[in-house]
Length: 332
Image 1: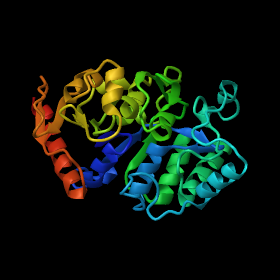
Image 2: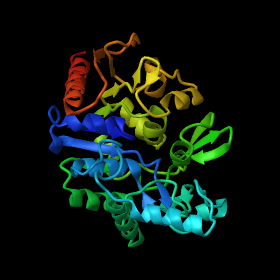
Image 3: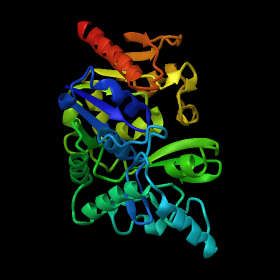
């Protein structure tokens, strides 16, 4: 049995080949929900959705978000209407008093749908409408995710990290922003001062999460701060990881991140923005998988391979290396 901690695109790319090494029927994926937002009244869970679309065979692998071949007529119509009505474009964070009204799952991550700043496809939107309607009927996020996973035919167990609201908020030189506003709306350009996981101290891991962390855990090459950090901020998660075998895959080629804002975010939380900074991000890790050209050194077992993942065969290679790292820990 193995559990993957997943966020962003790094771990999903790895999962494209993990089934060749780790049986899907014995695999659990815990997905980050710190990136979730409510946009125009719809509850959007980007990291969960990437895994749903991937498992269902419909993921757009050019972007690693959304549904392949999706249309965007609703999004285009929203932009046209805002232009005609002279309404503002760009991320429009709803006022503070609106963040804690109504659906608790949306706390501190509510945005207006006017001139929608995230491009959501029409089939993609159907998922958000269904999820939001299930939540309004009283489903927990876990129950809604299970329902959607069954609909997409997933062969792995997919768990959101929590049924409670946790918002990844990035404090920048231009003020506080939700991660989606920072990364999607502003392309990661504002200088980052610190990162906050609002609500994490009051949240609980979703049902099944702590039990899944009793198995061997693989932290994929996701952003350590905003993809994995929200999970580690949940009560009990870090303690659980300290008691089990954990293999961490580097999202860096030396001091250069594969993708996304990992370097800036690591520096903002006082961690070395490189592979060596993983000892700060993951002090409980028992082994590391890093690139063959990376000169980082660790006290823990370290296995090197070409960790760039551009397709399923690359993913299978990295997955086999992870299995090797697990074996080395077990033999110690």
